[in-house]
Amino acid sequence: MKRKITTRRAFLAKSILASGGVILTSQMVACEKLDEFLGDEADAPTNIPRFLHGVGSFDPIATAVLIWTRFTPTAEELTHQIAVKWQVATDEQFKTVVKEGIQYATEENDFTIIEDVTGLIPNGRYYYRFIQEDLGEISPVGETITLPMPGSAVDSLKLAVCSCSNYPAGLFNVYDAMAKSDVDIILHLGDYIYEYEVGGYGTNANTASLGREHDPQNEILTLEDYRLRYRQYRTDEGLQLAHQKKPFIVVWDDHEITNDAYKEGAQNHQDSEGDYQARLARAIKVHGEYLPVRTDQDGIIYRNFEYGNLANLVMLDTRIVGRDKQLAFSDFINADGSFDAIGFTNAVADPTRELMGAAQLSWAATRITGSTAKWQVLGQQVLMGKMTIPAELLTLVGRVAGGDTSAATLELLANTITELSTLKARQLQGDNSLTPQEQGRLAASVPYNLDAWDGYFVEREKLFAALAGKNTVVLAGDTHNGWHNELIDSNGNKIGEEFGCPSVTSPGFEGLFGEDPTTIAGIEQAFTLLIDGLKYFDAKQRGFVKVHFTPGAANASYHFVDTIATNNYSVLQGYETNYVGV
Image (cartoon, rainbow, N blue to C red):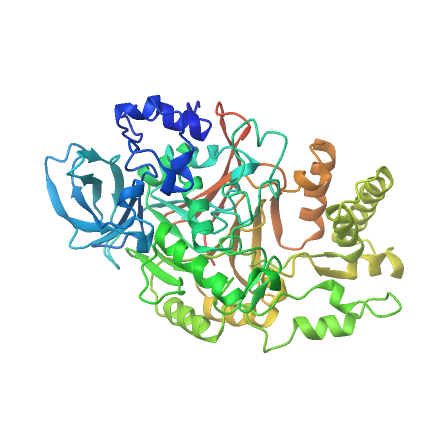
């Protein structure tokens, strides 16, 4: 596939093409300051594309859907209310308009327009657009759907599951691929934007040449900072096309606020950056301006969608509303350098530690246990599978992640992987000749990621109890890599299966270990062998997971783009599996 627009400047110069793109005034092509209106609109030129950031639809239900756009104002219009007409039709030419109205774009909401279009026919396909009649400006035409009525007979639902789109890391070819796929809905599981400054995380050798430096240049802190960052991301052609062609259902993760966020703080928030709760409130406000969700309470994004009698999609917030601060292995190092294993075990098993919080957990349990749908589908941020690996291997991975990529360390890592994999293979084959020391190397396992559900063991078991006996599929983002886990409770009962999606652009393990295929393949094989319940692991490719639900099975297929460094890309299908339920 070829994407014709690779930079903001190229995007704006070529967007005069009306087919699926942003409609510009003719004077825009000659403008010499194309970047100005992408940032500080007080200095923006007069003749600007009025729907620069495209259109989108969100949170469809049986009789309604949210539609979105942003009106791009001139400097003189910043203090005005701008009337924008919206229309919904059953045909792309708008010969049959079924709903229309007027909304007002104002500075209060960064000139975004969000309309909850109600009174629609269930299981329908609709087209929508926005018009500024005084200027004669018309937005691109968006496409969306309504869901089947809850409980009605349905035989198919196709979801594209994605997360982690870092603008400096590369082109959003994955969004383009999802837009052109046959899925019904795109599920975005968070890290839609990243907060970092120019030159920060995700920056690579291609960033500058692709025109992908972050805007604004600083780490985003203020209300305007967050707005500028969303505006920048929404000028990407691939992302615009995905929003234009498919409805989105989204949840936030941490980078919509800042790295490793939790209820009361974040790893990437310092006292010098002001009050964390004020920053969180600003981030949540802007998230709502650009990624609306169908809830009636600010700061609450957990909600569910009933897709006929086929699927109950339960979207969770495992990042902000209930999360206690993450544990860290470094907190359990004794003065003599030894690891306080007892203290660590007690902390992980602490029944008061929460990830979802009591209110959300109770809500989710009620929605799940009361559902008669064939599939219970949980869309949430972090890996739920039990991912424990030998401590010595995790220590070495941590050393590399910390920047130690010396030849000696990489050789030690390779040797350790070989030794542990050999021991595990012997153990699985029932080899009784393993020495106590060899058995101990395998038994001394610790959670791979304390930011995930492994750091909140007790609450995971509570959620598993609500899911017992259901046909459960859990969808996860966050890690930038592709995963397939079996979900097993503490009693050894199978609860369901988990599909973790790769990132849109954010680097996976190749960002730590380099591009050497032998090294990456060794890590993938070792993790899959050493982690009980892990059935598949891809550590190096960017893409999405397509999950096709039918009454008979949930089919998951992993789709990857072969490059994010050029707009000429191909889609490669990788691992595929069927889950028929419990």
